[in-house]
Length: 214
Image (cartoon, rainbow, N blue to C red; front, side):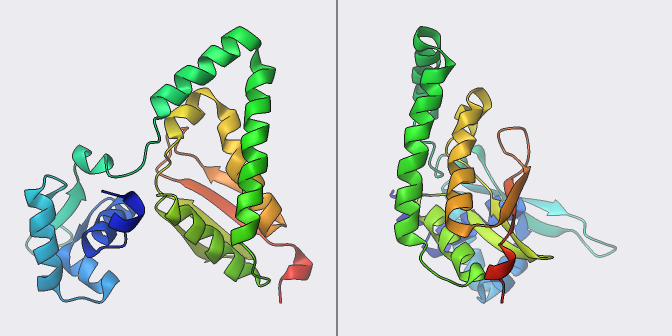
């Protein structure tokens, strides 16, 4: 199952939405996607049959409990991991044999190529359109990404990271996305939450350069 294609299907979109929000009812999902609750329930039945979601009653108020759906550990396998354990082992060996500087040089090269590729995909002039293009690029790589408006800029949210395990041991990994944001969006940005450090997402606040804001 190819990740980027799967996440464009109705069931894939439901999986991604549950990853973003933790849990949701059929009515919540129907409202999000503009579908009928029955149409969403049909997809949820298949996902539950396949062991990807489970339902549980949640009391939201004085009314009777609402059935909410959340992902199972099996569903996590749908998100790309990119052989993070093997990569961590390789980087550990490089660090032990050749020192930390060698690892830094490796990530410098990865960062340079990532920025070059991003520049070919992020070509808009208007700041929000640039953020949208970056978000779409991340989605194409299997990241559940979205952005929202904040005062003076944008918040970029990554709800999963193929390399979160690697970044715990090799913080240099995170320089890649920081450099991509800096070189393609400009202005100032800061990371306010990290999956590698136990957060629920990787969250970046991006404030475009003043001259770029209309």
